[in-house]
Image (cartoon, rainbow, N blue to C red):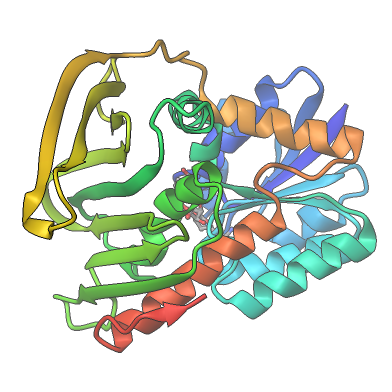
Length: 335
Ligand SMILES: NC(=O)c1ccc[n+]([C@@H]2O[C@H](COP(=O)([O-])OP(=O)(O)OC[C@H]3O[C@@H](n4cnc5c(N)ncnc54)[C@H](O)[C@@H]3O)[C@@H](O)[C@H]2O)c1
């Protein structure tokens, strides 16, 4: 039985608590938040849960083997470092840290101590993302040409991070999971409309080997909520609409074929292919249930998680460089 302590019970922390409680071989003993009202809420939901406003009590608790961190990004490094130093396994929400150097320090610390460090890249545990990965790896799409994502809605404006750090970790971790290549370079543009230096609209472009291009649009100033990804390949194309209650992933048998009649460029003919569309069956399992189970499993078996510290670091590296590129009006930055 794995004993877990959770730090941060705002919007996301309670989802993690619920899923760890639901695991057969885990229990949540204690949780922490700076806000007494959040703790009272958790106590109301789970009367046997211990609560504290001092996160160090969670880390110091002798029964707690794993610390789950769901606090704002700027606090992740200090809390995760203390927990690893105290010999606890760590599950840290995305993004792992707010700088590349802090991410490296956490990876090294976890490795030195032989502890599991996992990052909350929730989408990597969704059935839709894994179906898309299966289709790409199985060659159904052919050569991947591009991925294009839109994660836009009105708000929630964050006080300490821009829209890239808030929303793009999802898309970057998804691309990292499904594209079997390391990104080569990144460019990003964005703008801030509150005058606080935190961009609320941003466009990030990632260049991969083999002429694969990824584009991410993140936006807190959109009148509508869109969660859509398009992936195009030489054989088929995918549209994944995460807002759709059913038929989230659609595979289109559409594409182009280039026919050369002679060596002259003006003799190139493009033929368009429009075939059927099909929707693969996507299981309805909650991603967080699989994610929390995977964390417990990695601790029990002593294995590295799918979204380990290195995966977390790769996302932070992209975020940091996207921000650098935005500050230089879209300069391309080699990774
Ligand atoms: N994986 C996902 O899909 C997903 C979704 C939403 C949020 N998140 C991540 O979860 C984390 C929290 O986001 P949120 O939306 O729940 O934020 P939130 O602001 O709603 O909650 C954060 C909570 O942490 C508490 N807190 C801050 N410092 C603390 C400290 N030192 N000790 C104890 N408690 C402290 C705050 O009082 C607050 O209640 C972020 O890293 C965010 O990126 C992940």
